[in-house]
Image (cartoon, rainbow, N blue to C red; front, side, top):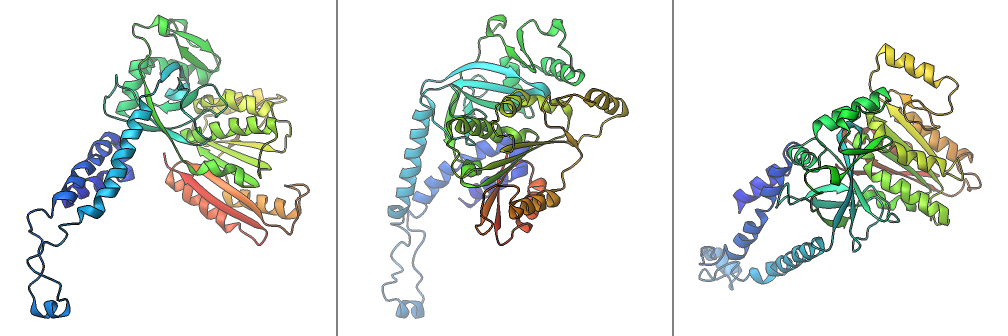
Length: 413
């Protein structure tokens, strides 16, 4: 039991999970054998009472001939039954009718799976487990839901960075050649080469895999969930600060779409303002959710309700900088994101950002009509690397005042 626990604990470290998720996944299921050992380790009476006279005088009922823990299974069996029942229910739930309807390939290797499962109900910001039997019969991998509950499908975005995700890309036809050509086209701002587009149908900044043009149909998929995430509480704050780094923007794709739907119905709850920050390392990454941000920005009835802040941290060469300057001069839309909001270059100054938010709230300019005597709750919801999470957390909590309360919640990915 101790040996199994050491193995499970060692492979559960976040670095192991990121570099070799399969090692974590398979060793984690050694818990089944751990539970068997827990229920049977006292059988045979090798754990007995001590025969010390002083101990016996203090506790007369302490008999060395009685097996200690022999009846412990009476207490431990109940959580085992609950766990076993939950796993059986998850298996039944995951086997309900599920169909992969579309696979879209975005720049930088991000694949978007659109799945139809009528029995699947979820809240914006939650995540699920995905299994593709053609890739692995045993492995389930977690992914954040990027669609809104109002959408007729469930979508997830998958970046090809590990063995399983690369094998999945090969299975659906999103080969490295296709991804490289799409990324190159996104960087040049031109269409893909026609030679590499024979099996695909263009859709703006992404391509849709055509199952009829491939030798194999789309694979069978199974999804299990949904499971909760901190970003579910976004509607409980008067001001929501959403921060995504790279592919960590995925939970906020669902939340922004859900906010859009609720804004149209006038059911925003306590939410009165949203600050959205997206930090990207390179230009092609903007293609992941470019079309979504365009729709959300264009549909805003109140321009002060949602403010989009996009930062590019990549060091640009001189030629690229001159092209940006030339195309940006007098243009209505940003040349990189095609949004009205301009892209900012470099890393955000979080202390200044939170200080400005607090000052604007206290002065009454940020939330018109709000009483300065009441405490305003500003919730920060972050998805990205741990180092950036610590920086943002410190900056947000340091900005607390008597009338403005900042909270911080992060999601691991």
